[in-house]
Image (cartoon, rainbow, N blue to C red):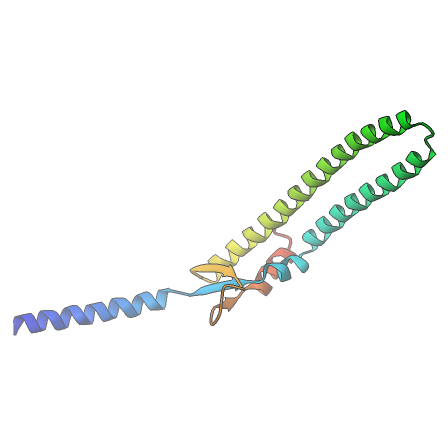
Length: 152
């Protein structure tokens, strides 16, 4: 009889703990990163800066092509090609550095806002929306609101 009471008591305590743990677990949120990025003014500005730098490089090559056509000797053309290749490599490196820097800034700001939403909504985790098949809570709009509030 004592064993039965002890087993019943342990089962009841186990069920109580299981239900209390479920109540504390808020769940999983998911985010559509592309949607957030598309609606984040800082990200839009960063994309404009990157695109402007790419257009600048294209214009540089168009100008150099015109200059190349005006050269009259093979030696001048060869020297011009080598110099242009060096200059273009420097421009390309600067472009890639800018692109990586801006993408990292955008990502860090979105991640910080997402972490804040995670805490405020008492979620266990936030994953990419493409991972969720059924369930979860879409927090994309909450993150966009945080980002637009200017805190990040």
